[in-house]
Length: 302
Image 1 (cartoon, rainbow, N blue to C red):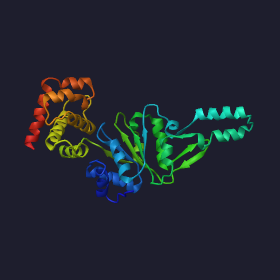
Image 2 (image 1 turned 180 degrees about the vertical axis):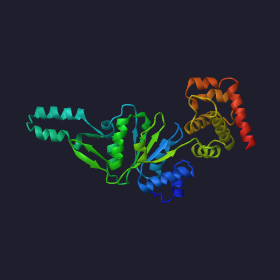
Image 3 (image 1 turned 135 degrees about the vertical axis):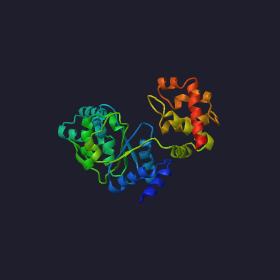
């Protein structure tokens, strides 16, 4: 297991997993590891918030446990549930065998053998490789009651199962929370965390990211791709393309053996970078050529 003893080492660990980040983000990650504080990452979709947790887990040699949030997620679903199907089989088996000790049967049914552990409980368990990385992804999709529960769980790093008692983490997990800011997350939860806004990268850093994630692309093509995507982000779109879309588009172009952008190629592959029909329709005809000319002009001026 690698240890990140400095900000530079954090950048090296992440870079080793193909994740390119700036000094500010590396600093807050280092402080999160050093102080044992949850890390709250907020920003537009596709800017690499989820990927940083994956890269951190791989770089540190820790297990990644992901809790994907959704509307209606409750504490029980995030912590544990009982294997009702197996419990029913055990009850039928006991009845067929004529077992009469109801107390013993109840103790057996609500033992660890019938417990299905969900992400929060899994993160509280000891691990020979060290505390896992717990990714709580897209927290803004949940509601306030779940936030309140999460606030308590992250304060004490323990959960309670009525039938089994309280389970406390022997070593607090490395917690990364992400939000696309579709709604505001409560200040009380944010105060428990170290916060960082993950923005779209500048031109040089996005080219660096593309070199790391799509190394087969020529430098000229990579620069054209990034310049076009960055010009696209200045347009009035329903959903601006993130870094994830930049990487996806580059891989699509490589699969088509494209060596340079053209309006025709752009029109054929817009579905890799834009996900709404209204946005795609806006770039039909001369619009793609206009933005491509704008992107190339910015490259010539650089």
